[in-house]
Structure formats: C-alpha cells, structure tokens
Length: 335
Image (tube, rainbow, N blue to C red):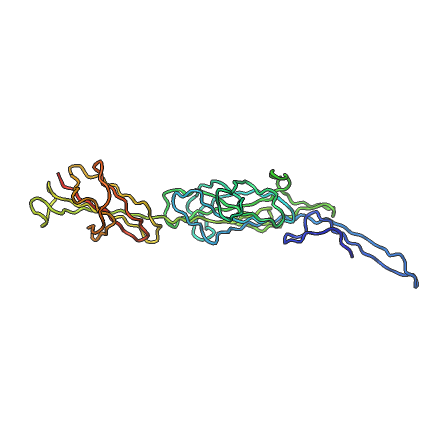
C-alpha cells in the first residue's frame, strides 16, 4: 500500500480536504510464469470536523470593588477543528444561577466589550483589541480573550456577577471578514468534503452546535462602614464637671466613631464632615482630635488634626482595615 498527500500532524487531526489515496496490488502466476500485476486505487477526501473549546483561565473568582471600571475575566478559545475557521464571540450575563467559582449570581456588571490578547501579555491592558470575532483561527490555534466590564456602586461584600463567553464557528470570509454560519452536510460523494459538528456541550450551549461556552465571575469585596455619633456634657457654668447639664455655657463633646466590618475591604481616604449645630460655638482651644479610640460612646486618644471652616468640622482618618474603628471628636459650647 502507498499513501499520497501529506496529512497535518496536530491534535485536531488530518486537515479537512486532504485526499487520502491507497492502491492495492495483486500479483499472480500462470503456471510458473509471473503475470502483470493487477492494481486498484481508492481515494477519498477527509471531511471537516468542527470543534471549539472555551475555557476560563481564572482559577478563582475575580475580586472587585463597587464602582471599579474595566475589570477583566480571562478565557482561552481553542480551535479543535481540522480546518481554519472564524469564531464569533458572545458575552452574556447569568441570571440568578450558580456562578462558575461558587456563589449565586445576584447582580449584573456592565459589559464594555470583548478583547483579544493582542500583545500576548496574558493580562488585559491598553494594548489589547476589542473584537466581536476571532479571525482565521488555524486548526489547533488558541487565543486569550477577555470579557471586560464595569462594576456598579451600592454592592455588598460577597455579591456575585456571573458571565459566560461563547465562541461559534463560521466559515469563509477571508482575512478581515467574518464568514458565514456553518451547517452539517450529508454528501454521498467521497470526494466531497462533508461538515460534521463534534463539539461538546458548554455551560450555555448544546453539544454538536458548532459552538462552546464557559463561565467566569466577579465577586465583590467592599468596605462596610458604619458611623456612630454620640455627645456628652463635659462641664457647665453652674456645676462645673460634677454632673454637668446641657445648659447655656455648657461644653459638649461630640464623638464620631467610624468602623469597618470584619471581612471587608480596606476603606481608604475616609473623610468626616460635621457642621457645628446652630446655637453652638466651636471650641478652638480644644480643637479636633482624629484617629482615636472609643469606649461606651466616649472618644479618647488620637492626635490633633482636622480643619474648621465655614462653621464645619472636617478631618481625614487613616485607612480602615477590616475590623478597625477610628474616631474624630471635638467640642462646642452651647450659646
């Protein structure tokens, strides 16, 4: 037997359209004399197997903060077909179902686009190109693709947004143009190239539909601040500091405590702004104390800081990690 043509050696298999030919030879004799051998040849063309695989490349959920922009989930698209194809790309949101890395989808991101890893850096950056399809992806070819999204505000730690990426095979079109939709064929001619769908079911598509899909997700880690404001009478003109009452001339201390819940993201650039009430005069001698502690509604410690302007007290607190509490406190006199 002899073989004509050179099949491609890759995991996708022999290239579609390859002609495979073999020839059988029959030798025989009449008596003791060898006769001219008889041969017969058979040829057929390798049919086209359409198969694509989409796989998330994130081993865990993508952690985000409320309001974060241009955050990427990462996928790999592999053309397991035995021919070059285009692949249309579709990004979609989950709706209240289980997410890829655990948890249940309960909010939607705003998808800003699908990007291909143009510069092969492996991470989403300004060098990547927005696309709607992968152009002329060769057999066994792979591309890294990102779903890029913006995260809304007003979310809580543990909120999850699930997304899916689907790649669907298209044929023809040439470089720079998406081809036409694929369809399976049932030609009887062995020299005609048939099309067979061989893809597995994805998370949002069926088996043997010339497509495949996988999921990924964004999980929120937010700061969870709470604010408590208390006041106490420090002294009054009649009783001094012994059981003072809130009468005119009394000194009132306002204590503002800001706490960040356990398991939350660190809160940065924390600014406290508190207008001094009417009928009260800010105590510039005592000033403003920031980054102190609080016990039973009474602030203590800390350092001088903050600002008083336009009858308003303000001050910036240090970053609040999960479980931290920091304070701002000041005094004012009742007019």
